[in-house]
Length: 295
Image (cartoon, rainbow, N blue to C red; front, side, top):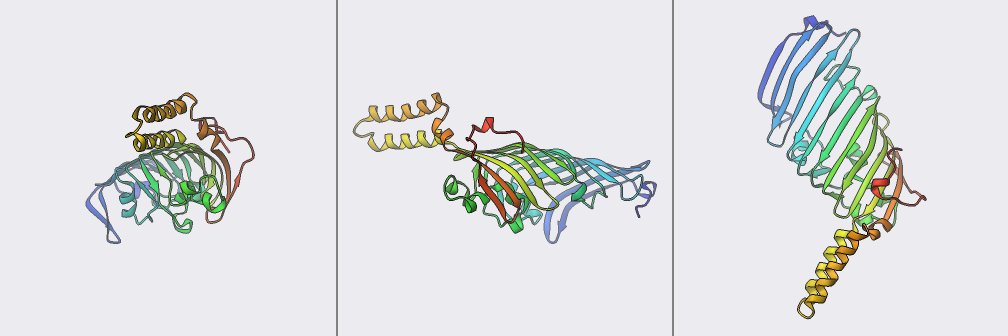
């Protein structure tokens, strides 16, 4: 049983170097106080050289274990090193990331209850890549890495996703309702492909129902290839070679990357995180900006 909050102390805690299982998490500061039937978390901040997590909120307990409500702000400077501090297996290497939002669940702050977890998160990740992940270990991260696609398809984007998808940015919003995470236009922009993900992920039963739209980024590829061709023949016909490269680039821009649009596909990803079922949709592929906004 939970003690009345009047029995819980008001305190301020400052730990300069917090270690857990010989891993240094960083500088921890906590300030909390009781107020009626609530325990207010005025400030909880973990700061290290790789990033910062700041939390404010309250633990409400009118009866039973109560409910935790938190505002979250995470600003990470090096994603891989930050996750390693928490013994999270490598799966994402990125320059930086900002995650902010609101979370609540029916229990104490130190007992996360996935079945009642609700809220929303805004996600912005800088340049990086997904590394090869064992879905049995990486779990949720493996769902969005798209490495399941090459195992279930024989053509399309096998080379893009097989060894880990490289991206220039990841952005989007997710909602959570009683353990069901909904991706709403989660956008992965990469040098090889542009990906948009919509659908739901069941955090309790570890299943998914996702629509994944993938479009090849051919404009950069062709312009670079044309530039390479220009370099090869520049000794003999420099003007003609430059014209070829410029023409290819301008053509792609004028026609809004028509080749990339032709190399666009939509997939339905369902089933468990460990053994997803991937099927190519038969409807004509659309531009990523025109892809459906929901499952």
